[in-house]
Image 1 (cartoon, chains in turn blue, red):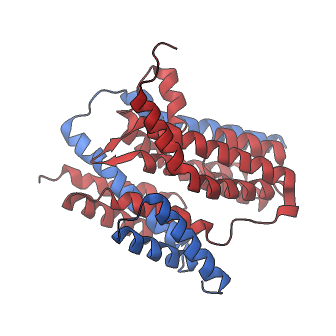
Image 2: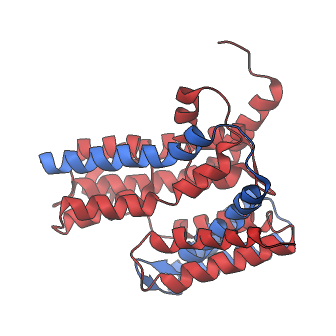
Amino acid sequence: MTDIWVVVAVIGAGTMLIKAAGPLTLGDRPLPARVQSVVALLAPALLAALVATTTFGSGQELIADARVIGVAVAAVALLFHAPVLLVVLLAAGAAGVARLLGVG
Amino acid sequence: MAEPSSPPIRFELRRGAVTALPLAVAVGLFGVSFGVLSVTSGGMGALPAMVMSATTFAGSAQFAAASILAGGGQPVAAIAAALLLNARYLPIGVSVARFMTGGPADRFAKSQLVVDESWAIAARGEGEFDAGRLIGAGVVLWLAWVGGTIVGVIGGEALGDPATLGLDAAFPALFLALLASQLASHRTMVAAVLGGTIALALTPFAPPGVPIIAASSAALIGLLRR
């Protein structure tokens, strides 16, 4: 039982420090231009990685299931400039329907 | 209260919260699923699960730690997996640092509301982030995650696993929608394609968490001359 509390405490404290590290050490000082041009690309790089892994990832495996259908529907909705809220709802709905129909 | 919050900040807070609402439903149901998992045989138990959701506030890391413990794994392995999965919050934290105001305690508190979804909602493109939107979304998502965990812990196995149907497709859809709004220049497209490719290529070989951290290296193309 104590083991579990050690795990909870270390993961909690560790995660808090990881999240706070940037905001606490960098402050609101402007970064050097070269560093800023790297930081500006972090969002697209990380977002694309999140799209890829949350669409195809299943542990250490890559699989194609109903999520792919949901994301494809989201992509079409985005082409028609649908608002974010609608995109998310359409994706969840499409994947849910696909799963009910036994696809993926 | 040193200064009353000006209307634009309140507006952005509300905007972040509203954008996060449909995700809060999905996050809440995954929280239920985490709570249920924790009170089934071999789980970490009700109180540790609730404390973990409130303090760690990171779904994938918590599921990883819980499943390692449930499988009889070592505590060290559970800690390593969770912290590795959360290491992406280091570059993510760096990206939002410039937009957080206030003293150290303020910044520490605000940084705790950073999760993938709140960060993505706060992104305005060109490396700009809105702190108000991040906080509004973060609070809503935290309430959903912790509330869901509590419901799962109390409801236990009677609830079953709600994390089926199409909820898991909500997350890539949000990330895709926000990525689409970021693709303003040729450079951001190259960084995105590179980041996605690195993450997929490493997934079968690297421990969970590493592919996404490695994908952040795609941002180094920012060092190239235009």
